[in-house]
Every structure is written in structure tokens, then in C-alpha cells.
Image (tube, rainbow, N blue to C red; front, side, top):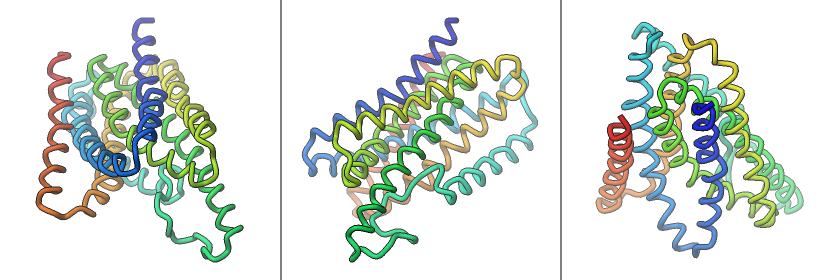
Length: 264
């Protein structure tokens, strides 16, 4: 029962708490958000990569039902390819740009409004699926080791805050009020708790599959960091901006390392 409470608590942190914290950034001015979000993204890159390489993969190798290193490599590769395909199907992520292949011409305002509204709805559906998967990963990490679960949940929260803030902006531009955007985002974030609860009961007697799930979690973190977050950082090329990014990525990695080491 204690383990279940840990899972529920940190699933709420990775889901609802991230949404609430992200919504608080809407109170800032646009200039303040423009300044803050890239720093959050840089920190999230370090946290995700740190959790993947310093926590999840080592625990998969050290698990009592440890799998062969070659199987870990294969599982990691298949995980990365799977997330690539999910992205292509617009299930894992959604287009965060005003101009994407498949968007209708902007001179048709009515069509554009309908398209924006559909994009907002798609974001909520995609987030619900994303959060559901995050819940599974959090539960699997906690069932392996409580300390690993905490690190995994913190890494997910670090990534979710800037992402949810971006989602809020898109939902507002799609015609949602602030109240509705917050309500529907919180509703979709409940997918984290649902995924965690289902994983807890489904995996209770399947501890031998936990190492594979840990590797898939690592693949998820690596893919998000490398394919989703890092490309956006390349938009800033000044030496001072690059130095800030490197320092914040390092800070995210060090945060995970210290948290993991301290908890142990």
C-alpha cells in the first residue's frame, strides 16, 4: 500500500502539478515567458538525459531480472523507432508551429479557425495519451526502486512544465478560455494517474518485464530530449546563449545525479 501511495503522489506531481505550475507562467508578461521558457527547456533536456543514462538504463541492467545487454540495445532502438512512428501519426506530439504540412491556406479565415480549434482538441488528446504513458513509466520505475521512481517523476515534471505552457498558449489561440484551457489540461493530466494505477496492478506479477519498461522509458526520455527539445535550442546561436544552454543542461543532469545519489 505504501508503494501505491508513492506512485499516486508522484504521478500527480508529474501530471496535475506540472499543469498548475505551467498555468502560473501565464501570469507573467510575454517577454518574461519568452525569456523563461528556453531556460526551462534547457534544464529539461539535462534532466531527461540524466534520468535516462544515470538512472533508468543502469537500473535495467542491475535489476534482479536483468536482461542481456544486447536485448537492452535492441529494446532501446525499437523504443526510439516506435516514438518516431507515434510522432508521425500525431499521437505522441503535435505540431507546435503555425505553418505545418497539411495546414490549409491562411486566407480562408473560417477554415483556419476550424483548423485551430481541431489542433487544440488534438493537443488535448495527444497529451492524454502522452500522460498515460508517463504514468506507466513512473509506476514501473517505482516498482523497481522508490528512488528511481522519484527521479523519473522529477524528470517527467521538468519536461512537462515547458510543454504544458506551450500547450496553454496554443489552446488559447485556438479559442479556449483560460478557465477551459486549465480545466481540460488538468483533465488530460489525469491520464498520468490512470496509467500509473493500471501499470501497478498489471505489472504486480510481471516483475520480469520491468527492465524492458525501464529501457522503453529511457528511449522515451532520449527521444523527447534529442528530437523534440534540442532542435529548438539551436535557434539561438550566440556564444552567450549557447553557454547558458550548456550550463542549464548540465544543471539538469547534475540535479538528477545529486537527487539519485542523495536518495540512495
